[in-house]
Image 1 (cartoon, rainbow, N blue to C red):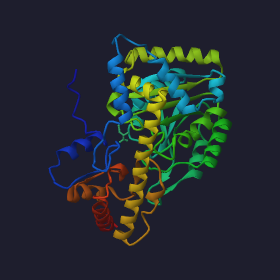
Image 2 (cartoon, rainbow, N blue to C red):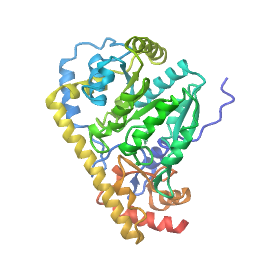
Image 3 (cartoon, protein in one colour):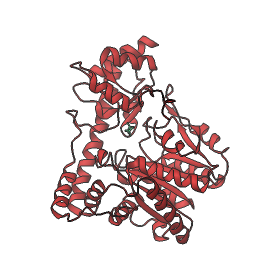
Image 4 (cartoon, rainbow, N blue to C red):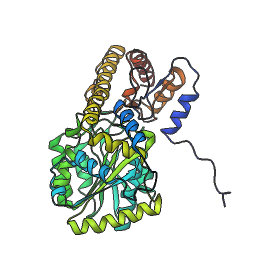
Length: 400
Ligand code: LMR
């Protein structure tokens, strides 16, 4: 049965993690996988999470199953956080939320739902997009296509080309949109451009699928949800995949959710029954611990206040490392070519350097980033920023 299998090359992001760990150099810099790091390079457990875990451990009396939809209080808290307390789709009871095993689990659950409802639909993903979007959405048999989004060499969003391409999508197709902190580019749409995208989705009868993995890492919790809230206020049907890996630092606990919006409460109930059947057929029930922690933090006023402070500290640190790296690159290159890094959002930016330069940075300087030159700004520290900037300047100009 397995004779046909040759060993696959490593995953473009996870393979880098392993390479970095195996590198024995005393000075090495990990700008690869998207996890938050503090100024010492650690990815600590948030204090609000530690406290919530303590409370849960003391109180928990059973490990019996919860349900395929996960915890009701988690789903309720997620909906309020993402949509705001008074969003029309909540008032109209057109949204249903289910807990999922991480943002990836949510993305796959939504993809399976789309495939069940419209097997011939194409899902349009941004070019470039997060590498794992392709297997997560395409793996269940959906056809994928790409719309132009960002030109790394020119460091700009290709908004007109994006609209032009989506205007040619077929009615009923799905458009995957990064809700904030676009991965890998760090380039987000301003509100006026969101409105233009919404107008196009409405006019062409396209279904939005929003990936919200970084709420609170861009500007703040409210503004990072702006696009999602506006899209859902205008479109009859939509999906939103949510991750708490980054903003609650719950990476390995796999905490996510899928919100599906339908055109009426009855339809929402029907659709939800299919979502639950799909979940039952893949993993039966989502893991509970991380979602129990998240629900506790989101519903306990004191823990939530602590979380907001910690979340802001993460966001501010990343923003200040953006500023620092851009300034160091200005000095190292003698030009403003990398200034754009300071103005982008979330964990990532694309340096816009060649794959060869990326390889030299890894081999000669032990600086790790994905082959498309995506850097995780949380890997920058006041200690390594100058080293990284000097190496990038040397290897970039070496390839020019
Ligand atoms: C990333 O983009 O690096 C993260 O979202 C981690 C992952 O699973 O790829």
